[in-house]
Length: 142
Image 1: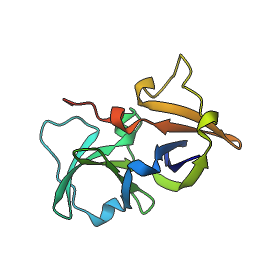
Image 2: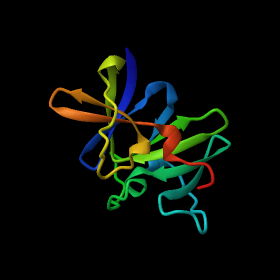
Image 3: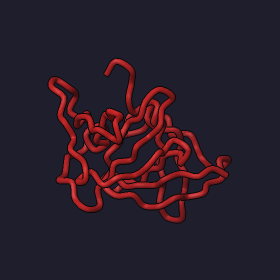
């Protein structure tokens, strides 16, 4: 069994391996400094207890219409071997324990989100949860 933090971007439910999550924050509590000439999905950087953390808005990354951030919006701080990256989501749901054997690979034709971002898909009651590969959300050189 593996645990995932689940969250919404638009009406879709997504998940990230809980072991990749350092913390979850309210973006309204931070000042995010924009970076000139950066891609639209890179909202800027924030100073998190002395560490500079790039902030990626998943709505923009997935080519969805942007919305105003509100009290449900969260920044999920994800861990990489050499850095932290924050991803902005519309709303955090909860932690789900999932049998890895029941996670299916993405279909050959995936519409909307680039298949490279998808680690797998899980049927949760009457919904589908798309588990994201956080390593692919940010590609080196972008």
